Image (cartoon, rainbow, N blue to C red; front, side, top):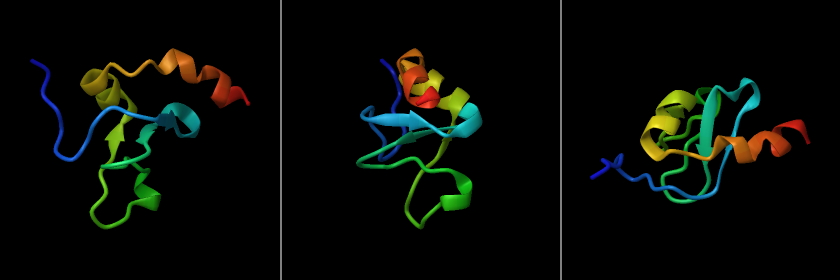
Length: 65
């Protein structure tokens, strides 16, 4: 079984510029360090991919748009 991080679950997400961070909107939102708020979580893009198998290829259109 795949481990899940506390308070986090797959959902709507997008990448920051340079694809440094994967940001999840919703419960346990992941936000970049410069925008980090109390009680929020963040994951580096690589950790996000390993943890959730995010379909990052689907985000290329958003990145270019």
